[in-house]
Length: 239
Image (tube, rainbow, N blue to C red; front, top):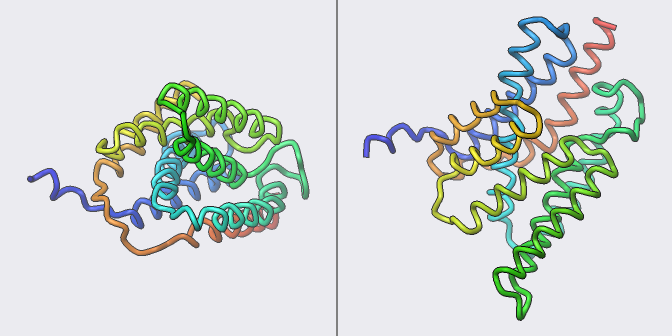
């Protein structure tokens, strides 16, 4: 099939693209004046690709995570959420420690716990598909409440994107990931009006489904590290 020849990206490539778009978004936030064309291009256009890409990759990663490794993954997310909070608050929010807004690692932590609980509901005896659906909706509602209460990044929209991506792939297992990304982008557009996020669908349309190089540390280490580097440059040279 000629179409398959264009599927040039594996999972590691998508992670790199998502990470670069996130860095571009934060670069625009820290170094560009608002209401300028450059700011809009970096943040509103390119930067909006990051979250839907990470969201789809996150759900795919959960599906590949063995059940015996899930607790370890939760602990890792928790550790990096704490590690990322001080640089996030200082460099992006403006205070050394600010509890009014939390970094996106908390969103991924809550999202992982949410998917874990939803997966556990599937194994409950006596639960038919309708009961499982209502249980999953209740889990979404509770985790969204927690996300809003702690004010983590993307809160309501983030939980909804993770939930819908998991649900679409769960019941339409043969569906391609770029279609899952479309569902995520619809939620983001409804929540934020960020229709440029649909650009994230393009890399997934070129996704060949292969693992590629394992690059788990790219995001977990790179997220707080790039904030520290960008933040220090901004504070030293542009404050």
